[in-house]
Amino acid sequence: MATVTSPTSVPGSVRLTHLAALDVKGADAEKFLQGQTSAQVSLANGRFAPLTCFCTPKGRMLANAQLLRLGDDHFRLLLSHTLLDSVASHLKKFAAFYRAELIPLPELTFIGVRDNDHALADKLSLAFPESVNTQVHNEHACVLRYPGERRWLVCLERDDQALSIDDSDDGRNAWQLDDIRNGLAWLTDAQQDHFLPQMLNWEALGGISFKKGCYTGQEVVARAHFRGQVKKRLMRAGVETHILPDIGATVVNSDNKPLGEVVSSAVAGPESAELLIVMNTKVAEEAIAVFLDEQPLHLLELPYAIERVDPEQMAVSLNT
Image (cartoon, rainbow, N blue to C red; front, side):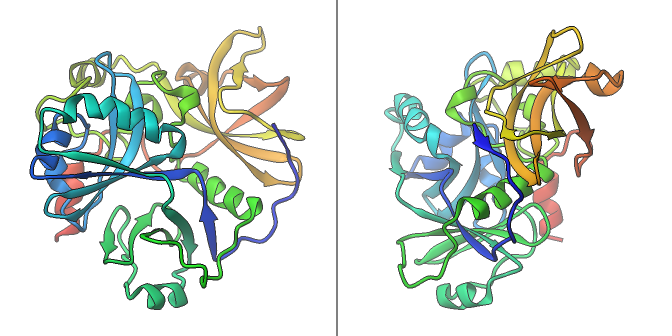
């Protein structure tokens, strides 16, 4: 646990350490990924970068990721650095049957950018994209438009020490707080194999294609959607606290009955934090009082509706 203090001013560009990249290359890269991921892989066309996830046969998430295409036979998955090795090992079991190579890239440099850092854009010779979940790339870097008010994720092919980038925990906390306020949760190793994708609102963010063919876990994920069997959902909440809650911390009702668990947290103000929590949907539906470490939680709005968004339609809208 970290002590909660007042956040400092938000930097324009900050070095991010919670992400890593896994490249998939080869003549069968697209075919291989199509059988493993919730995304319609063909939608990743070098401009649209769909959200996606990988599941167990029981439909539980092994990782969620963003899928970029960097070439005809070259894809890149951006995911939590804590899951890089386990996801690579899991996928290698299937990649052996395809002309596809998995290349973990734990040392790539990730930079979170706000308000379009023109100096960085000029240095990389890239015009930052304006539509959420779109990408641009060249031999120096790939840039992804993030959800929220003018945010970009820059992935450098090599670390350029000449760049003036904030490398503080305060800067990274500010980026994490933006993720929370945009209802975007990145799964880590602490909760691998815990949640159906819908429990992280992944279909509401366009991270699940219900129009593609089979992939590992697809039957369970589809059944949960079409039969309305998802009883837990990602919710945003605030809490007054001196200590930043840990991932996996339990949320309870007034009778101390567990109703959910913390997925991510960030400092929001003096002695306050904001959280993303997977909780029983009754908490919101019935206005149930919930607590974390004996402190009351107050629910906050998410910036999107909890309803299915098809990535196919997202891709069409980007081309019109």
